[in-house]
Length: 115
Length: 115
Length: 115
Image (tube, rainbow over all chains, first blue to last red; front, side, top):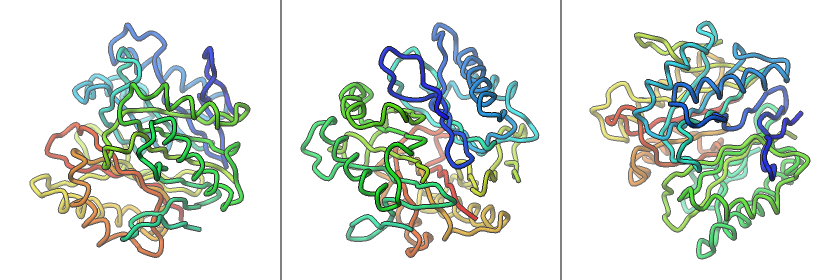
């Protein structure tokens, strides 16, 4: 199953299943006027929907790669992370600074989850 | 199966299988005199070969992480992406800017595919 | 199985299993006074322990993403890599430069391994 991102020209899928694992593409905020905490919350809301479409949920996430536009945003991103993530099922995670295609985009998150 | 990159001192494999998934290392262009579109096309030609060696093909790619040397190269990289990728089987994808070991190298791509 | 990183506020796991694959979070050095070779050796010592806890070992690593704080540190990181990695089972690997949350941290490594 592949759920295609709503774009004028589709270039990627938001979520793809392969061999029992679910891959979620760089999840982003739609409303980039918000700060990094708000943008992260928006991305997680999308992730919840994608996982549910695949019959999974956030307790099944095994790996997270978090790209922030400035590493000093890490603490504010973590506010949304700690609100949302299942504390009994924490994923393996790396958080790194990267320049985004859209400078208003402050955070982009890749996930791998099992079903 | 691991296909070892041709280097004086081998330090990595270009493609490795594990538990039904195929991991392709940062695919690069051999001829770095080309622009990012050309370099991306070269990397994809290698990826096609690696996937075929594993009995898979690009329609089975589930995840892509694309590193570009300058995020402004994203559009020119996408020209090669859209030529090559299977529009019915788009992978989950993140595209971020990062500094490469070789400054002539403009793009490096990690893939995960199923068989 | 999820092994939680020792932090005041746990936010991630060091190693998580999902669907037969083992995901290791950004492995870091505890003693950041060491140079990048020493820091990489420390990270690998942790990785050996995590893999052993999951009934695996470094010969089963399929994918590595190595983040270095400065791409010029790649060669010194590779000294530790070549000492440690199984030359008969080289993983698919990408090595990129990125800014770390802690500026004393020179290297962070994500692994995927099979069992």
